[in-house]
Image (cartoon, rainbow, N blue to C red; front, side, top):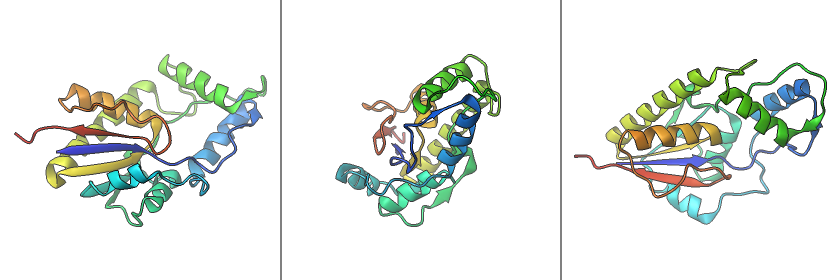
Length: 188
């Protein structure tokens, strides 16, 4: 059995902005609504890897679905809201003004430490990721191989759960756009 976790392509959104925490929350909404940047197509090795999958699953977010299309999969077998990215908290402060990337790091760290305003809690996110890992395992058992075109943080938690439940991979969880990790497990 095989599970392939792949991160979506680069979103078509400006991530070089300086914003307040409130504006960062608006930016996260735009990020979740963004498709992928057509100037950043999938590399050939990602396209080859996709051909290994008997079943393809996406989140309902446009960056996941348009990544499937870019990979040559116009109609994935499944789309599940549970597989959306782990929610990003944010605050309603108007100051300070910081780069989007810094807000992303600060709020993701704060989220891991318990801050979850405007988002699911860290504990709820971990539970959801574990349920996603279980669902992927069941799909792999039914189809032999499954590809999930997903998101950075969710893929990291899914990979961690898969390893703890006996799945093996020489790869790290996919962090970069179009990066993938292949997990295998004996059917015996």
